[in-house]
Image (cartoon, rainbow, N blue to C red; front, side, top):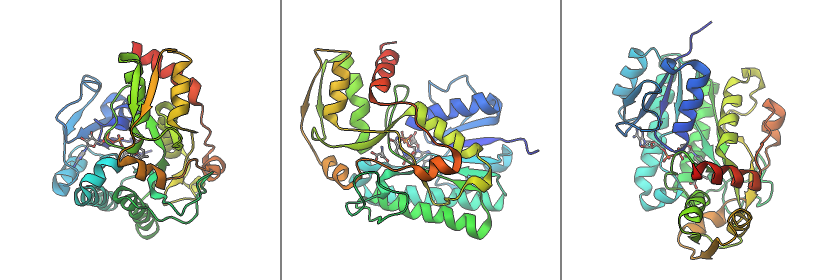
Length: 314
Ligand code: NAD
Ligand code: AKB
């Protein structure tokens, strides 16, 4: 049996920190190498190896993979939807070239598995709004969504053509308390909890009835690990799987917070991110993930709110 050694790229980000810690629990601290452009991360300090690395520098990445005897890569470095609209060229460049660098090295070094997340941002205004299915019309309007959709087909290509076992999930907006989100349209659903505790009020950059697909981080981490642990023959989707958690609007998350903090209030001042949110589905159908490898979310809005507030208070 191959002894797995994992490289997480983008380990200092919102998902990276928690995924690295979860992988370290599973595979042992020394067998999970965290890497990021950032020099270090206080949340990861003392938990295992950390290297500073730019995914765009293919040679240096390749050297690390060989030197550290890496067998699997989790690629999380990317520019998200809202930041991407401010610098479309940079977003396209990082999101595409970073992935191609990793896929090429995975092919050359015969890595056992690669993980790369896509997003519900692949969907556009012509996709179904409710229970958006796995296969449907997909016409993204953001550079982030375009890069994710193209990336999905590169993953499929490397699997079909070279046999690289690359797996992917279309995450919804992710909500977490450990690490801050990195420039997405769904970030309001994290900020609101911080502001509720600190200020008892929040000004939301999306309008009150903007429903979006969302997921609590523990569900997202579990979905990732379950996908990656599933036997290869169970994986029928080699582009990227729809996964679903919950769907809510700013008004509903505010109401959920008010059940715990009665004097919390919300106001609305939509900005350029409203247009992005309007282009995405409101809810996602994850039947294929459920059938293939048993996906089932655990957290709904109120359960997440209680957990978020409890952990942020700590
Ligand atoms: P993030 O912005 O919080 O983290 C990304 C990390 O990548 C950062 O720590 C950054 O320093 C690092 N990075 C940037 N450029 C790099 C480079 N050139 N080389 C090495 N590292 C670099 O992002 P996240 O929210 O953790 O997202 C991780 C992945 O999941 C991304 O692909 C994102 O598109 C996807 N995703 C996230 C969400 C979400 O809600 N967070 C939803 C859907 C998909
Ligand atoms: C974003 O809002 O850009 C991300 C995502 C849904 O991919 N959270």
